[in-house]
Length: 265
Image (cartoon, one colour):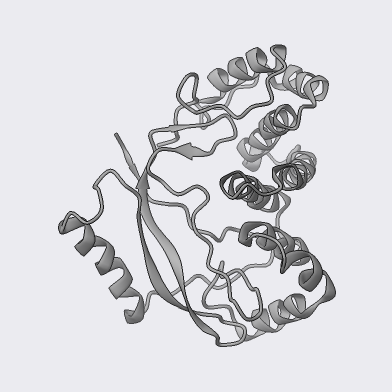
């Protein structure tokens, strides 16, 4: 069983943020996870997480939040959510004062000014503040004019978050579908991002199926049914599984075990 490091909350975008720099203050959280593991207080087969101290880079608020460190993927659902003792989506800390989702800890002064402007804006206050952390991050990335594929991926994470918290799955899935469609259009002629384009088109099939739009899902599936990409070894099995589920008018999520595409290495 291969071990996978839990994916980071942040991602690439056209609004480039300065990468996080490791600091001594971050070491204890990692050490705590290893100590708990060594003492047998958490299972070796479980995902590793701990409550850590966070500081909002926008207003300096200090607070505690759960942080994921690692986990084990035993499979993967048709919507590419890894299953097993791994947090999907990973925990995303959020400032309790301003509502900023901490997808970066060390933005530059210029970036802080832009982020503060967005967080103080009416859209963020009325739409993002009441929403879940990953959905709020999707709105933030929209305002930052981030890469459409990254925005789609953020809302996909928000859809998993909605499932876990019995939230509004359809709302997050609709947003993800919109942005993946935009990404597929934008990336169509970019050969260096062929894989991202194909993933966006595939996820369009899955999201339409999950939303009960079976005719749309079938039409989308027909356009990529013979697609192949060496970087996506799971794709043929996933497409076959989609065909069976769409034919059965099955909008339910799969469990990632009966007919899962293999989790990427």
